[in-house]
Image 1 (cartoon, rainbow, N blue to C red):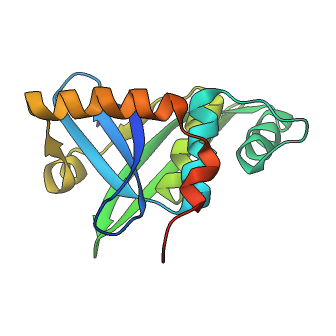
Image 2: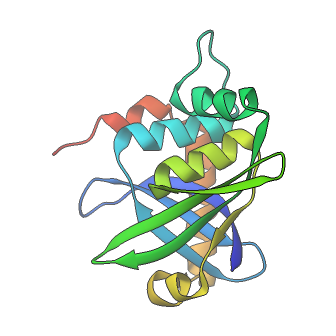
Length: 160
């Protein structure tokens, strides 16, 4: 398994759809995963560590896990089939370890809210990962700057 971090969220110019970029911690590859606008907003809020008066869905999930005296041990992007990514959330509660099938966007968002590590299975990274060039590094820096000024609600303002 390859440990990754969320490099950022961007809007794909071709489809005008949000994409979450997962970057290898000890490498030069990124894994782009198309996600929905609501999920993009939720991940953006989690990246910002935004607090709300009432819990959002990811906060509710975290509170439920904690309320059951558990924790999110890790999230794994496990496979890709027919251009669809699959993920698992690994929960720990006492002596029990549970693995739950989940969408990557929900899994990544929950991992961010719970400060849990995110991993990608090697075959997934080999199939769908992309190498980062020096030019890509510059664009990623621009992306990080742009994300600091972007409102997460903006991910919902795209054309269908």
